Length: 158
Image (cartoon, rainbow, N blue to C red; front, side, top):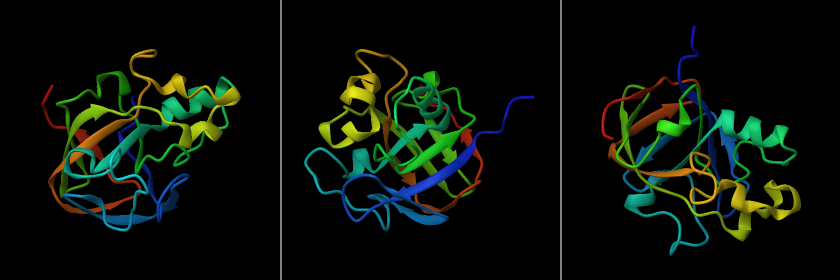
Protein backbone atom coordinates (compact mmCIF):
# COMPACT_ATOMS: atom_id res chain seq x y z
CA UNK A 1 0.00 0.00 0.00
CA UNK A 2 1.33 3.46 -0.92
CA UNK A 3 2.23 5.87 1.85
CA UNK A 4 -0.38 8.59 2.42
CA UNK A 5 1.02 11.96 1.36
CA UNK A 6 1.58 14.24 4.34
CA UNK A 7 3.50 17.19 5.70
CA UNK A 8 6.74 15.70 7.02
CA UNK A 9 8.24 18.98 8.25
CA UNK A 10 7.32 22.69 8.40
CA UNK A 11 10.32 25.02 8.18
CA UNK A 12 10.80 28.71 8.98
CA UNK A 13 13.59 31.21 9.53
CA UNK A 14 14.18 34.85 10.35
CA UNK A 15 15.88 35.06 6.94
CA UNK A 16 18.17 32.78 5.02
CA UNK A 17 18.96 29.08 5.26
CA UNK A 18 18.74 26.66 6.82
CA UNK A 19 15.13 26.97 7.87
CA UNK A 20 14.36 25.40 11.24
CA UNK A 21 11.49 22.98 11.93
CA UNK A 22 8.29 23.99 13.72
CA UNK A 23 5.34 21.73 14.62
CA UNK A 24 2.63 23.95 13.11
CA UNK A 25 2.06 27.27 11.45
CA UNK A 26 -0.44 29.73 10.08
CA UNK A 27 -0.41 30.04 6.28
CA UNK A 28 -1.45 33.39 4.81
CA UNK A 29 -1.49 34.69 1.25
CA UNK A 30 2.15 35.72 1.78
CA UNK A 31 3.28 32.37 3.16
CA UNK A 32 4.13 30.87 6.54
CA UNK A 33 3.37 33.58 9.10
CA UNK A 34 6.62 33.25 11.10
CA UNK A 35 8.93 32.92 8.08
CA UNK A 36 11.09 35.68 6.60
CA UNK A 37 13.26 36.01 3.47
CA UNK A 38 16.44 38.06 3.24
CA UNK A 39 16.12 38.46 -0.54
CA UNK A 40 12.57 39.58 -1.32
CA UNK A 41 13.41 40.22 -4.96
CA UNK A 42 13.93 36.50 -5.66
CA UNK A 43 11.91 34.94 -2.82
CA UNK A 44 8.50 35.42 -1.27
CA UNK A 45 5.48 37.41 -2.41
CA UNK A 46 2.06 36.07 -3.38
CA UNK A 47 3.27 33.92 -6.31
CA UNK A 48 6.15 32.44 -4.26
CA UNK A 49 4.40 32.37 -0.88
CA UNK A 50 5.58 28.85 -0.04
CA UNK A 51 8.54 26.77 -1.14
CA UNK A 52 8.01 23.00 -1.17
CA UNK A 53 10.23 19.96 -1.56
CA UNK A 54 9.89 16.20 -1.34
CA UNK A 55 11.40 14.17 1.47
CA UNK A 56 12.05 11.36 -1.02
CA UNK A 57 14.19 13.68 -3.19
CA UNK A 58 16.17 14.76 -0.11
CA UNK A 59 16.80 11.11 0.85
CA UNK A 60 17.89 10.29 -2.72
CA UNK A 61 20.25 13.29 -2.77
CA UNK A 62 21.69 12.17 0.59
CA UNK A 63 22.30 8.73 -0.96
CA UNK A 64 24.31 10.49 -3.70
CA UNK A 65 26.52 11.97 -0.97
CA UNK A 66 25.00 15.44 -0.59
CA UNK A 67 24.70 16.83 2.98
CA UNK A 68 21.16 18.11 2.33
CA UNK A 69 18.46 17.73 5.02
CA UNK A 70 14.88 18.96 5.44
CA UNK A 71 14.93 22.77 5.58
CA UNK A 72 18.56 23.14 4.48
CA UNK A 73 17.63 24.42 1.02
CA UNK A 74 15.01 26.86 2.28
CA UNK A 75 11.80 24.95 1.69
CA UNK A 76 8.91 25.84 3.99
CA UNK A 77 7.27 22.46 3.57
CA UNK A 78 8.97 19.10 3.28
CA UNK A 79 6.30 16.76 1.92
CA UNK A 80 6.34 12.96 1.94
CA UNK A 81 4.42 10.41 -0.12
CA UNK A 82 3.74 12.50 -3.25
CA UNK A 83 4.90 11.56 -6.73
CA UNK A 84 7.14 14.62 -6.99
CA UNK A 85 7.53 14.30 -10.77
CA UNK A 86 3.83 15.18 -11.03
CA UNK A 87 4.05 18.28 -8.81
CA UNK A 88 4.11 20.78 -11.65
CA UNK A 89 2.92 24.37 -12.14
CA UNK A 90 -0.86 24.41 -12.00
CA UNK A 91 -1.14 21.48 -9.55
CA UNK A 92 -3.33 22.26 -6.55
CA UNK A 93 -2.59 20.70 -3.19
CA UNK A 94 -4.82 20.60 -0.11
CA UNK A 95 -2.72 20.81 3.06
CA UNK A 96 -4.69 19.53 6.03
CA UNK A 97 -8.31 20.64 6.08
CA UNK A 98 -7.98 24.39 5.52
CA UNK A 99 -5.09 25.32 3.25
CA UNK A 100 -5.23 25.09 -0.55
CA UNK A 101 -2.19 26.01 -2.62
CA UNK A 102 -1.32 26.03 -6.31
CA UNK A 103 2.15 25.35 -7.68
CA UNK A 104 3.26 28.43 -9.64
CA UNK A 105 6.83 27.68 -10.76
CA UNK A 106 10.00 25.72 -10.13
CA UNK A 107 12.69 27.36 -8.04
CA UNK A 108 16.13 28.30 -9.31
CA UNK A 109 18.96 27.07 -7.06
CA UNK A 110 21.18 29.85 -5.72
CA UNK A 111 24.55 30.03 -3.97
CA UNK A 112 22.86 30.37 -0.56
CA UNK A 113 22.16 26.60 -0.58
CA UNK A 114 25.67 25.53 -1.61
CA UNK A 115 26.35 23.90 1.77
CA UNK A 116 23.62 21.33 1.03
CA UNK A 117 25.53 19.90 -1.93
CA UNK A 118 28.78 17.97 -2.29
CA UNK A 119 31.31 20.05 -4.18
CA UNK A 120 28.73 22.86 -4.38
CA UNK A 121 26.66 21.07 -7.02
CA UNK A 122 23.53 23.22 -6.64
CA UNK A 123 22.60 22.48 -10.25
CA UNK A 124 21.51 19.04 -8.95
CA UNK A 125 18.24 20.84 -8.02
CA UNK A 126 17.90 22.60 -11.37
CA UNK A 127 14.67 21.82 -13.22
CA UNK A 128 16.44 22.55 -16.53
CA UNK A 129 19.30 20.12 -15.85
CA UNK A 130 17.46 17.52 -13.74
CA UNK A 131 13.70 17.65 -14.49
CA UNK A 132 11.59 16.60 -11.52
CA UNK A 133 14.30 17.38 -8.94
CA UNK A 134 13.59 21.07 -8.34
CA UNK A 135 11.83 22.59 -5.37
CA UNK A 136 8.55 24.32 -6.23
CA UNK A 137 6.92 27.63 -5.35
CA UNK A 138 3.21 27.91 -4.61
CA UNK A 139 0.61 30.59 -4.12
CA UNK A 140 -1.99 30.31 -1.37
CA UNK A 141 -5.61 30.00 -2.50
CA UNK A 142 -7.10 29.31 0.96
CA UNK A 143 -5.39 30.37 4.18
CA UNK A 144 -5.35 28.39 7.41
CA UNK A 145 -3.39 26.40 9.94
CA UNK A 146 -1.14 23.44 9.10
CA UNK A 147 0.56 20.88 11.32
CA UNK A 148 3.27 18.27 10.88
CA UNK A 149 1.52 15.05 9.84
CA UNK A 150 -1.38 16.78 8.07
CA UNK A 151 -2.57 14.94 4.99
CA UNK A 152 -1.67 16.35 1.55
CA UNK A 153 -4.07 15.73 -1.32
CA UNK A 154 -3.86 16.64 -5.00
CA UNK A 155 -7.02 18.60 -5.87
CA UNK A 156 -6.71 19.16 -9.60
CA UNK A 157 -4.94 21.68 -11.74
CA UNK A 158 -2.31 20.52 -14.23
